[in-house]
Length: 390
Image 1: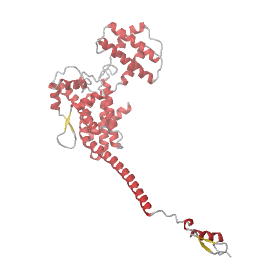
Image 2: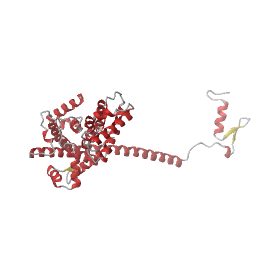
Image 3: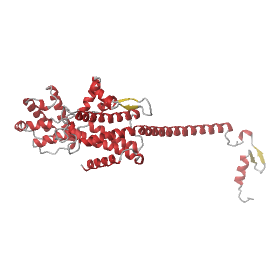
């Protein structure tokens, strides 16, 4: 007879699981001890050990994640704190430079004091030297910020990243002259009636090759400009440049008669006045005007105008060398001159626009508490709008 919910097979299995079995006659028999099935229980000590090890591993993982998150947060807070320490002096120095360059590029000729190698009046001397000082001060604060932060990219903070982009545009404006090389190639192609249309990459390659070729030629001739060469040397240079240009862009060579006929105009294309301040030079100039801060939260401060003028007039020759390099940007600069003959005009204009970008980034970071005057904000907007329009 079979009860509900139980079968004979299930009943026998249940009996065997308890160490007994049924005889053929149905009687319960005891199994030998070694044949009895023991319950599959893990020892308590082993269970406790595994649980303890698992908890410890979990604590280590969570602790590591917490420490990494905290380190990232502290890094962001440190970058933001450093940014705040240098935002105000950088805004002040950028504003001073902005208004000076705005005066320099005044179409009414207010920047006349940069023209001429000798400044006859105290006013002209002061204006030229203070323009140099304002350029150096901005480089100084940029250098201080870089030295304290090492680098800005990757901070994960939009405000800091926008400022870094603006600072990069300023240093690039002073350091990079690739557009001058490209313009030189275009001018020579037009002068020699070269009708092919090379790619942008080929034009850039031609510009670099011609620039290097001219520098080597001038070095061998012990001249600093193509204008200083003799007529024969100028002709040799023009022929060499013409051959290089046609080789790179893969077009027929320029005739000898055409090169001779256009020598003066070709030399004008080659003798573009340049004064690029390379990034390592900018860092050195920045270091020159910095000193360790004695008080306050900042590690660095910038020297005052009095110390700067004393350095320029009576400082060590090694220091004055760096100031002379920076001064080449504004030395005898005619803003109303031919931009194709003097690359420094566009160079200083790009620095002017980049200065406006720095001010905009600093102001937009906290417009409600910004100390940048409304007049400066309006002027900055005007310059950036004009630059965007081309």
